[in-house]
Image (cartoon, rainbow, N blue to C red; front, top):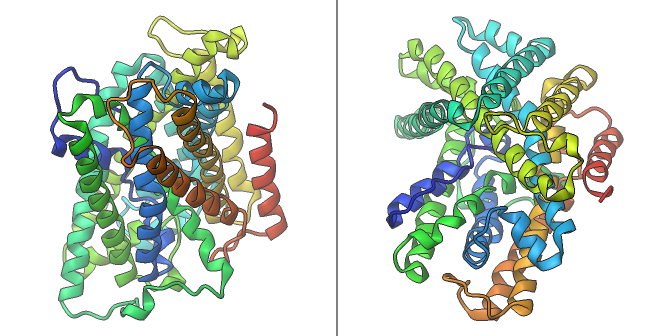
Length: 460
């Protein structure tokens, strides 16, 4: 997941500005290796997820944000439709998903930091060490928590530069290197051709890692609140969505293919392969000295994203909790406006989840299981959001909406319905153990996901 935060402003913003905000909110590079295992078929999955998830989320969230612009976001939207209890479930799932996401993204940061060394084989060995991963995850996470306890303003600078240095610039470099490699005529590690675009539908396991691609696109709803800040939203908001969607898909597709160009699918490691790709490209073009700098940039990007996400959902949960949905002990706010006890509870959960790296067969297995759990929890939140949008069209048709989903009520059923179907497909596939990765016992894998979802949802 990338830094998913809005930008409050009283001035009108341009189509291009809103498109850039959406791209920044969604794009992250850490998940590209998981799709690179599919080679050219990954293009199909990216386009499928964009049509059945990215665009519906963006369009539907825009109507909800303009119809119910009060604080609370998804809590307000779902609560208006199904009652405050379900609204709280939605915002709680957003907090829970981000909490589980921390060990996975910080593992990626630990790998990036390991690759700042001078020797790739030594770097790979260090990155695969479970105890090293745990140490870095906990040190960086608690450091970000301490910064957050000082207030959101303290994290702003880290977040801003982390996004630029750790995501946007590395993405541009990765794509440029991929193009240079392709046009240089060097041997490719992936088969190209129109026939390779279509997945092998006879192998059900091939869809499992692809389910995670839906979470790649998650977060576009965060900037839907700005639809009211754009001139002629009926025309310009869909245009901004189109631009940002095409750009986001392009970054994911081209970045994934760049990895597939130089690393054989059988050797792709979900945790390490992005860094190995940069190392290999730099060696090919005789600029190996840049590899440590790129590793540090990616690690800094993780720190920036985590610093914001430690604070964001926790603050939202605390504000909702003060309406009576959390016990008093979890409503505590310190003098800097930080949700102290929620942050400490979140830290305890992150610490316990990190121990999974010791008991599971590999860092990669733990990474995959936690990643899939974040997918399922986030998708449940989207079920509620899409359902709320359809329901509110019928329950409150006269509520003013500066922006409406094109096509009237029928259009809402189409966009929200497509989003629901796509989300449901991804949700079901998330419970099937991937054939490409060793996750230990398949039964244990499925059991962890089922228990995890029950713990976070069924209690409500």
